[in-house]
Image (cartoon, rainbow, N blue to C red; front, side, top):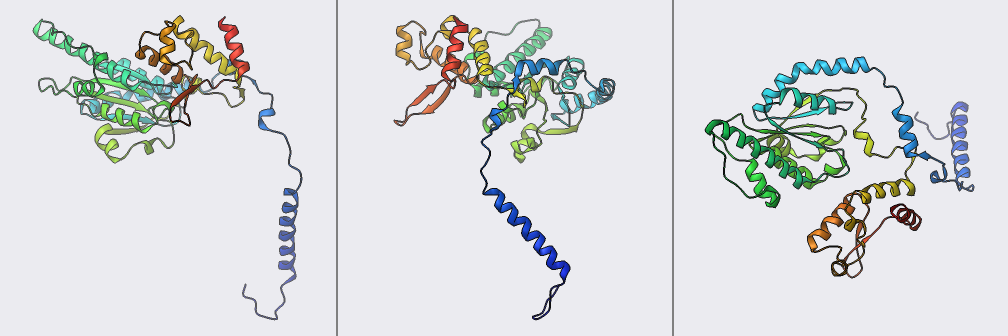
Length: 351
């Protein structure tokens, strides 16, 4: 409303102004009061194992409808196979776990091809080991085809585990003019998983997908998953065919590696995780002092070479039992991210 000098403000607008002014004055006064000392960490949360047991006994809902929806996608299996044979990759998105859907597609439709499954929802995924496994599966498939066609076995070659990742990718990108339908499939559950979200992992996965003898089938669940790739990766390397396939199935497997919101994931849970990892290692790896130098480890006959020491440290770092930091003098230092009480409990249980 346009007001001129000398005109009076209507009583209704004046009352509204005073009401809003009093509101903000009251808010300002409340901020000056003493704040509560209570913290979110003070809440007594239930142990994670107890909570997971309670969650496991909850009866699933709409099982028949979910099963019917999954069966309806079977009509697309032949189309998906055709697109794989044409050189495309398949990317499944939509609400609900797609693990059962992809594994059913692989076990029923991809029986003529070698299949490697990668669980991207795991805390850690070794890309080099993935490429080695793909090369081994492809090699076995090629040997089988040559044996059936010629009746002779191929010669020996260098083990894939000792080859560089570049050599392995070159092997996966061989050109076979005599057999256009020879390839292996890699099925990735949650290609946007926490262990694969870094740029380096996505670049390697894109290079794997672009190999001539590899076809990729993957699922995504994060709303920002497409931001992991640029235009070249989407249209040239992955060469995705996008499919909206909501299943509304619970994320039973994918969520098993994430801490529950209402669970106590404090020192006791970290100690349990450390205990499981350490008990699964060899006695030498269990007794190896983390902060010792390579020379001291060798003197105590804990490791015989630097490679063995690095493998142990990699195992610890993958399971977040060891953190790497840089000292003031520029050297990399290792420390255990566990409090003294948790370390004492861990030593007692290991003893």
